Image (cartoon, rainbow, N blue to C red; front, side, top):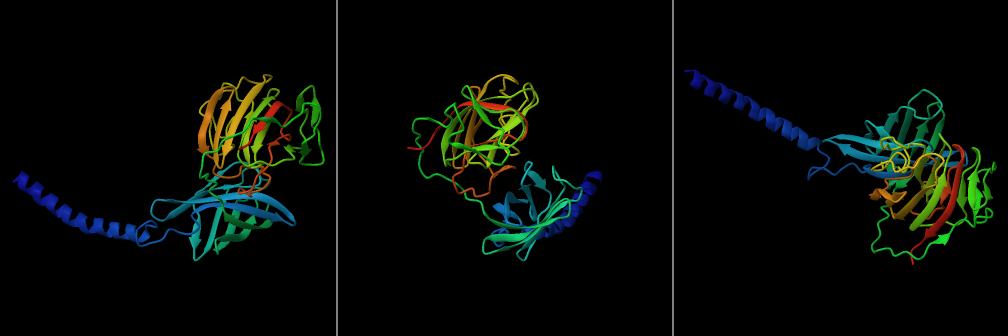
Length: 325
C-alpha cells in the first residue's frame, strides 16, 4: 500500500512538472538571444569611445556581453581609472543606457551613459559624477588579428642616455631629465613619450622607483603595464606587471623599491607577453581595450611608448625596441 501510494504520488508530481518544465523551456527559448531564431543584440561587442569636452577628446571604452538568456552586462573604462563592471546594460530599439558608481571621479552621483546604435556607430551622452554632461561617439574595436607570423629585427635604442632626443613631454610641466644614462622623473609632473609611433614590437626597459612610488609603461600609448611598489604581495589587476585593470600577472616578480627591474614586453596585435626580471608573468593574452589614462582610443593605429610621470619619482634606462622586419 505504501509502495503503491508512492508510485501514484510520483506520477502526479511528474504530471504537474512536465507542463511547467515545457512552459519554462519555451519562455527561455523566446528570451534566449542566442537561439537559432533570434539574433543577438547588435550592441554586443567591444567599442572604442571618444568623449568630447568642448574641443578636447578623451578616450573611453565599452564592452557589452550577455549573461544568461536575456541580460546584457559589460565593462567600462573612462578617461582614468580601471575597467569597472556594469551590472545591466539596457538595450531596446537601437537605444541603450547603463549607470555605474563613481571610481576616481570627483562627485558622488552615478555615472550615466545613454546612447543610440545606428549604422554600426554609437552616439550619446555621458553624465559624470559631478553632473556635467559630455557627448561621445563610438566605433567597434578592431580585432587586431595578424594573419601571419611576425618576425622581429634587431633591437635599437630608444634613449641615447644623454638627452631627451626622440622624446617629448605630454604636458607643459616637463620634469624629465637625462643623467648618466638614466631617464629620470625626480618628481610628479608630465608623462613622456617617444616621438615615433609603433605597431607590433618587442620592448626592453629597465626601471627603478623609491618606496611607495608608481609609474607605468603605456604600449602604443593605450595599454598600461603597471609599475608599483608591490613586492611580497599577491597578484592583482592594479599591481606591478599587470595590464592595468584587465590582465593579472601570474606572480609578483618584483625585486622591490630601490632595485633595478626589467620588463621584456612583446605586443602583436592585442596579444601581449610580459616577462619581469626573467619570469614570464603574462603569456600571450589578449588586451581587451585601452586602459585608463590612454592617449586615445584609436586602437587600429600605431602609437608611442609612453612612461607615466604624474604618480611619483621614477627612473628608466636601457630602453630598446625591436620591430617587425
